[in-house]
Image 1: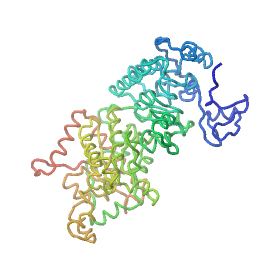
Image 2: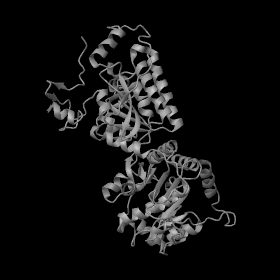
Image 3: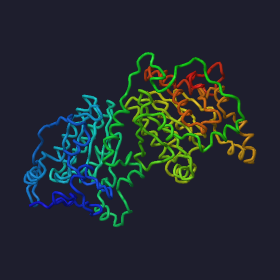
Image 4: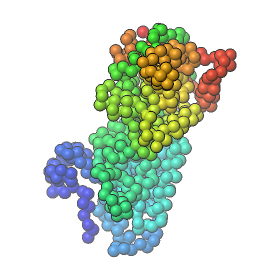
Amino acid sequence: MSEPDRRQPMSDGRWIQCQGCRGMIHHRRFARDLGVCSECGHHHPVTAEDRVEQLLDPGSAVPVESAAVLADPLSFVDSVPYPDRLAGARERTGLADAAVCARGRLAGRPVVLVAMDFRFLGGSLGAAVGELVTVAAEIAVRERRPLITVTASGGARMQEGVLSLMQMAKTSQAFAELDEVGVLSVSVVADPTFGGVAASFATLADVILIEPGARMGFAGPRVIRQTIREELPEGFQTAEFLLEHGMVDAVVPRQDLRGALGRLVAATVPVTAPAGLSASAVGGGGETGAVPYVPEERDPWEVVRLARDLGRPTTADYAGLLLEDFQELRGDRVFGDSRSVVAGVGRLGVVPVMLIGHQKGHTTRELVASNFGMPPPEGYRKAARLMRLAEKLRIPVVTLVDTPGAYPGVTAEERGQAVAIAENQRLMARLTVPVVSVITGEGGSGGALALGMADRVLICANAWYSVISPEGCAAILWKSPAAAPLAARALRLDAGELLRLGVVDGVVPEPEGGAHTDPVLAARLLGAAVGTALADLLPLSAAELVRRRHGRFRGFGLPAADSAPVAVPVVAAAQR
């Protein structure tokens, strides 16, 4: 007789004991809450069939079968012959192996779903699971359907020896094909996900969502303790730990998973721009006009002060005001996640976009959390990861620049701040999708430029852009921070001067008194300008985009005869 699965909640048929708080939950409420305790939020394991029912549109699931695999390649015997273990797991679960696959629809859109089941030999990765995941990826490639995997696994299946190890390579290869053809992949990590699954398809997805409290890692805690002989930190390898360390995009409660997945699928469907695509269809909100907006003259130091007003809309504010189906994405997949860069996918009108921007805040707590809008390397590497995702999915990139500069700290230098900024510039120079950048507040030095190499560079009327802050310039050249207003004038960092120099292509109007006086109107004006730019850029080929972008930046510093920048019209309606 097999040992009972101690991950399953104890039940008498009517009442279920929560494995988190040990409280009793009525079975109807337990089912209604999708196996989540309403008191403590503990996420109990659910079956693979339950996952299919919870995530796909009702009645849309069509099972996918895979080819037969070697049943017992090693003739493996420990305390029980491997065929007997398989037979027992099949009898207990009613499953052929540790995963199921189905075609179906999610929020009305076609997807392929693979769900693992820990009840079947600990959700271990053997030939059958590897084959099913690979077949699912091949269907996704062939039919251009997003692939969603839900993982729950203790690792590779020891009874299949090195052939189980080869399933890691096999599934990784299948995910590489998804990248080549531009098909979205999303991983939903359930508790636990370790070993070979964590080190292959679970973490190769474009977007990784994880349930609260779920654990993921290559080596399990017991192995790590035995190997390094050290105690592990509180919360090690849990969802919240992984989010902080940049390994996942979001911690999503089970009740919200279907909505989050639906937003991702809806917001990452590429568009082919028809001839004459209007700015209003892209989210411009008004007709395109032929008259460029010319900002009123204002003292540059006053512009600097307005750009720093804590009431000005942030990237997070603009995401909420401008985009539909916005889903924030986090983490650089290397070290951490920086809250000084906010990024995610959403739809601007009919067009999916990848929005990436510096983030400050409105309160002291928000400013501290976002490092006052000064990103460390992981912020820029997160931006780079998501630009590459936009390139894969063929969706435009929109960046919002508002930073006094990149974080100038010891830890940032240790992690390669200069390299991160340089690599972002190289990446943006060669992106083959439209890129629009808007300086919405402060445009401080290389920290701003790391998000600013675009096909169309716009600036808000009360924003500034310069090689250094006025205070920094004053301290170095005037030997006194009090000379900052004088330095601001000398640097010619305001919108009108930047337009004259050709550094920006257009100026986005602001509400009277500044964006902070009416954030909703400021967002509408920004959306109008971005919509106009995208309507111009979307019909262009990838080669033409790269060629024009190269020419734009190639000419800086040359005489006007060799490089004559022209102000790009902004939506006429935006002037109202």
